[in-house]
Amino acid sequence: MVLTVLVAVGWRPLLSGDGAVAVRLHAYAVRNPEATAAVRVLSDLVWDPWTMRVLAVAACVWLWRRRRGELALRVAAATVAAALVNQGMKSLMGRERPEWPDPVDSASYAAYPSGHAATAAAVCLMLLWLLLRRVPRAPAWAVAAAAVLAAVSVLGVGFTRVFLGVHWTSDVLGGWALGAGLAALAITVPLRVRRTAPAEDGRRELSGRT
Image (cartoon, rainbow, N blue to C red):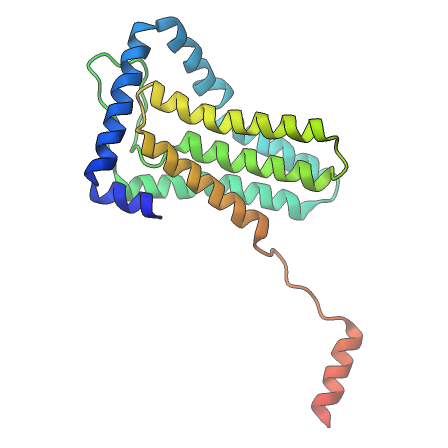
């Protein structure tokens, strides 16, 4: 991923852009404690990674009880991979989080990529895919509403992390790319090998003897 390389080498234009956005949003957050408190609720409760994981678990249980184990496995794989790969990348990158003399929130461990952004992207995309797959005749308004809700959640959680001064903008972009990529893999990668029909096996065996 190009963004990851740019972050790793400390590309100056990227760092400058990150810094400019962070400074402006942090100044607003400090001047508006009421807005900051509301954003913290969204970031720490509504769009928290554990909230997203609970939604994913609920979807997996629903699918499993309806004997759709393969779909449940895909959702679980994307969700677990988002957590594991994110932590691995954080460990490798070791990027420092923004530091402020007057912080409005705090977070631990490395900054890149954002775990909130990665988890939200992976889970929301998987749930939206499930809706389109399991309810192909859903009304257009329902699909549109689900898509808007997913977009607001993914974009919103990314904004909250930068607004609260615990991530750089590129951390969020990297998290979105990671979550979306893992969701795409979970959707497209085959989970089982197609078996050959018995008749076809017989024909192949006969042809091998002649």
